Image (cartoon, rainbow, N blue to C red):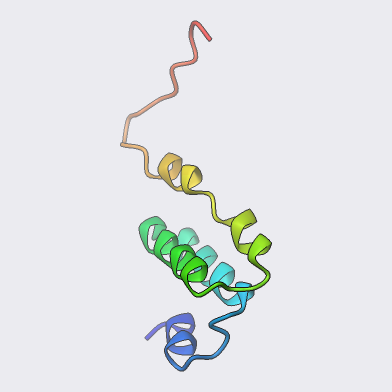
Length: 79
């Protein structure tokens, strides 16, 4: 069991934003964007504090951009 999941399962830091942010960032670096999204959602559900830290780090639109299909490009003509 990964470290963050193990700590969480023991109830340690479940109301602390730092746990969720570090956990989600680790998942994002490993390409686990959907799992990172779930961690941020769990932070919000558990009312992790300080909430502004979670809200600053959690950006669902960032996750969508990271998960764009292979070969997809920005079309900025006509903007």
